[in-house]
Amino acid sequence: MAFTKFVIRAFSTSTLHFHAVKTVTVIGSGLMGSGIAQVAAATGHKVTLVDKTKEIVDKAEVSIKKSIDRIVKKKFPDDAKAQLKYSTDVLANLNMSTDVLTAVKSSDLVIEAIVENLDVKRELFGLLDNAAPEKTLFASNTSSIPIKDIASVTKRKDKFGGLHFFNPVPLMKLLEVIRIPETSDETYNLLDAFGKALGKTTVQCKDTPGFIVNRLLVPYMVEAIRLVERGDASPRDVDTAMKLGAGYPMGPFELLDYVGLDTTKFIIDGWSKRDPENPLFKPSPILNKLVDDNKLGLKTGEGFYKYNKQ
Image 1 (spheres, helix red, strand yellow):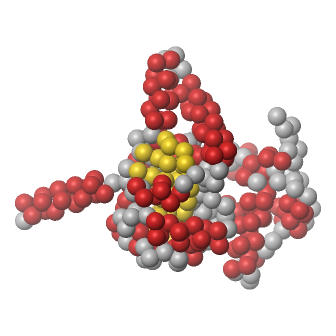
Image 2 (cartoon, rainbow, N blue to C red):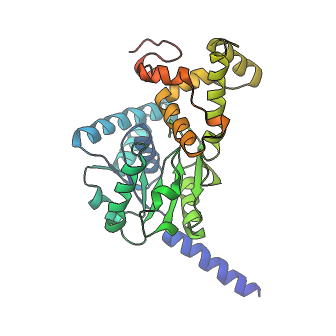
Image 3 (cartoon, rainbow, N blue to C red):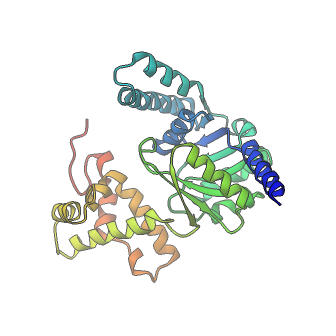
């Protein structure tokens, strides 16, 4: 019996190691996609970061290099050789491309981090399903669209899951690993192991709206807006109360401006459409007006607060 357990244990370990994710394609080179690619390259994975044009991927590469420069200065403040080696090693693992169909042909894992639009995501994964090898795992970094809806266009639902990273990816330690009913245990274990290999703390969640963090965080932020809409308190006082009274690092309005008011509106509108009777998902007039006026927060210089754009 002991020998049998040893053999099973050894076989399971070697199988997992054999199938471990080593090559990754990240599609979408915005803040999230670039961050995911950078962290994966820094942990020894061979990464291809893909976007529509060379101009876009070149811009992403510059951004990643700046991010690496900031990291090495903190990681090796007095060691120029170590800084250079770290930077060189990470960049050696990173390839930029505009050819998504070629990129996925050699990938163990494809992570999608493109625009939050179901039709666009489904079109992409429909193409990838035919181009990627049968072994390749698919994952979406979506924060608001059901994984099952994205996966529905593929023939590999058992190899499909969600990997929800948090911005900025190199600094945030959490990774939500999402599974749909069809996700196999092997796929989930490989996605979870990949997350841990990136140095992330992983949590598991079913394919429920907003997963864990956003399902709690977005209604909290929108309820803060409703306080202001009713005239109960000002944004500044709400932020101060939550930071000093609840110990939050940022108040809800500071966080809204940091995340982007358009992003929050997109999420709450999507949830409201799916569950219109849920009062937590009721749209906010103030939020809608700010987005209509292109006052999206930090990225436009004004949201609930005004900012000096550099």
